[in-house]
Image (tube, rainbow, N blue to C red; front, top):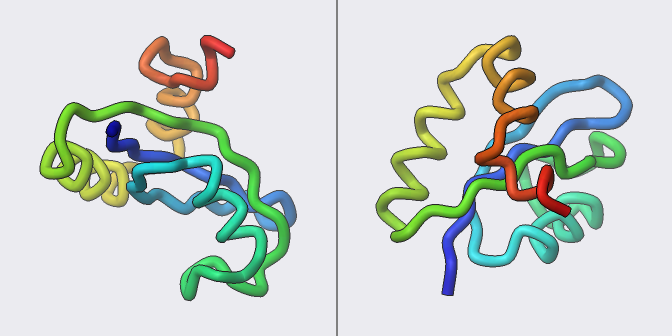
Length: 88
C-alpha cells in the first residue's frame, strides 16, 4: 500500500491545500463533498499534484515541507516528473 502527498487547488479562489493520504482519488472526493474540516464549504477542488512516498513517515515529513512552501515553489513542483499526474 502506498502513501501519497498531494496538492489540491480551489477552483474559485486559487488557494492550495496540501495533505497526505493512502488513496488520493478518494481523498479528493472527500474534499469536494465537504468531509474535510479545512476545505469544507470553499467550493470545488482540483487535484494538481501527487507524489508517492515509501513510508507513512516519509509522507508526513514531505507534507510538512509542502505546507511551509510558497506558491511559486508549488506551481513549479506541479510541472516536475515527481508529479504522478504528469504521467497520466
